[in-house]
Image (cartoon, rainbow, N blue to C red; front, side, top):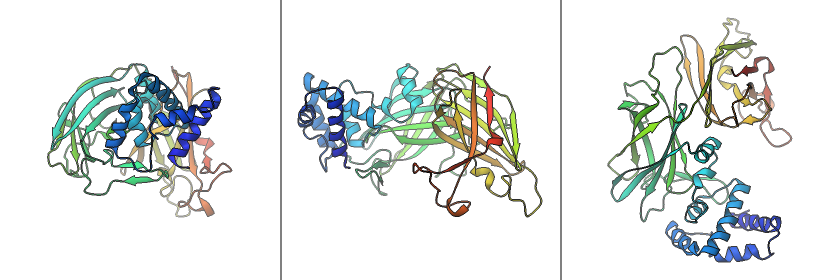
Length: 402
């Protein structure tokens, strides 16, 4: 089903659910100037978006499209840009897939800022910052008149497939370096020999439209290593490389932690089938939940041993997090560090926030099941078409929160 058909279908459903006139969706659709044609340039979309500023029409379109987005959970890049031009739906970032950031915006835990840098007629603006002691997120917006590329570098096409901007496309974000009070936080592809120890992982995701990106930094725990932890407030420097622009964009932003976190360090361990998993620490904020685990394989010298602690099975174990009502929290990201000398695999797992501070939570390890009993390859699917999981009950942990 095309985007146009999806929108038309959603409008019909909304009109029916609200017991509105049967022709409501036709009037909304007509007033939008046939909102998403087959091929519509971003310039033309922006020009048409200004047509909707008449109060009554804007109200109808905004309300209808808001319901579409909330109901479907899908925002195409063209729709996202148009939605931001409509009053009442200006908080498109709140509708991104990250529940923690949505919660932060609703609770006033983000800070709106205005910092920028410009080169070759292209400006990058820092619009919003969030730091909860677990991760730092920076919303950046590109101003590139006449540029049709997607700032993030890829987007979802009308058929649902991911389309990647080709090499040489101008004004696409290609590299990010971060510094806290002048000290490097991450190594990058163009600087592998950086002598500074890597203090965390940097990723960036689509910010909701063609010109927006969310930059995420998650600090590595590195248990047993004396690396300085980020302070509660610091100066964050972003060095951004855009394709087709020779100069590097440099923007400095003050960052301040704005949450009171709950930290649990129980050092709970479970052992089963040649493997030991230890919960080193859990940190809970209103925006994120961070679980730090250490997984260690038992010393089995027998070549016939094939348990969980053998070979590469250690890194294949995945983890789900549940609250005390049995509701699973969505996982946002993960990163790990394998120390050969120990040997031990440390993992930092970031999940969505708990609705409120729980009395306890549960960590459930599992392995994916592959077809034909293989150790990797194509997933075996359950009756719902989802990858089949083999939960390891013996390694499950229920943790009390003081």
